[in-house]
Image 1 (tube, helix red, strand yellow):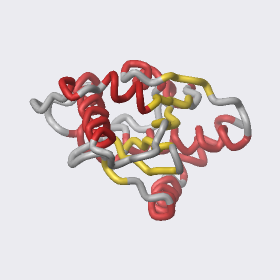
Image 2 (cartoon, rainbow, N blue to C red):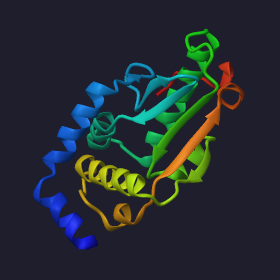
Image 3 (tube, helix red, strand yellow):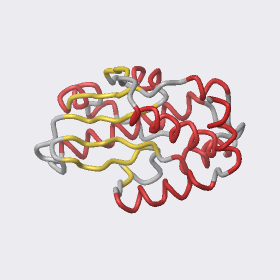
Length: 173
């Protein structure tokens, strides 16, 4: 059964990009800053954090790419987000939250990482995320990505402001 779903992905990968375009139009997220890898969407008192697959794919193709460089840019994005929160742009927001296959990166950035329960919805979301990873990753569909299970990453606004203080801003890139 597992092999069937990945054969389906290989047969029609355009479905993932079409679904991503549809979702992006119906649930728009805005970049944290110019050139960022993170985009955000407000949902009540929560800021949903989204990774921009197109921006990450472009970064991966550029000279000098490394995972460390990507994490550095993500930290800069979070510093910029903290500055926007400090400026009062997101009054009433209490939490920054996202779902990812890359929980290790979330922990490195200061997020609390929690596994999501196994449900039909989360299995579909995992399949979608692994497919997007395959579309945007230079090596395509990888066994390591297929083995990952989504995690929820969350950080309180207080933790964001504490961890990404004004003096943590790094303007050198």
